[in-house]
Image 1 (tube, rainbow, N blue to C red):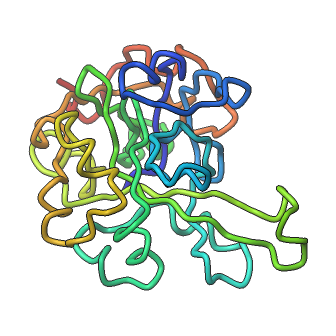
Image 2: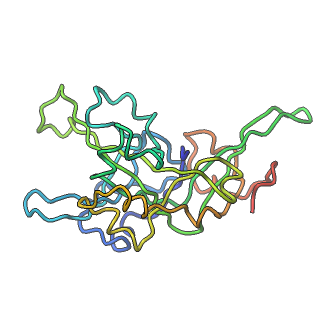
Image 3: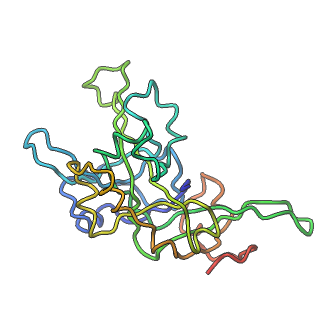
Length: 247
């Protein structure tokens, strides 16, 4: 799975890099070295402009943890932070979004954990690892809009925009740390992935790739990452690896 990640690219830099046509600078998010479920994230997606009828590429702020449009409430968002790519076009929670509402979530990399057994008077603990390609990762995602029926439809507070990250079996270096990993969209495939007119499941699955073909960089990082409240570049500092999994 992908349960925490790092996102530090300035949204203003993503706009030209990813050919974004619509963006509200007041929604710009600060760099985040410890993005956790239910927190806001930057995502690139395409929507039809209701005034012109044209498809417009947008940079939007979404909440991580997908709430299906048919959900009775938003309470299950923290459980739907990931969608398994193998079944994403079959599961009720994801299949509509997979067909029409796809996005990418830019990230520097993501965290996974391995247990370290107790030894020499030291308690057992979980060692965090940072996995990356050394560049910007465009993690494949889906998004949904959920309406709070207790509020008027024209009330902005009535609408919640959420997202989830697609995952697959981890291989190579990543597989030594965890059995799942996020999928990415190559820059050359971005137009096809975001296009809401593309609905063929087989074609969409062909656009999904493992980062660096699964052979990504792995580094042990400080256990401070384990606290959701911890944030800052110091979370990526080099740390001795008790399990010898780092590159």
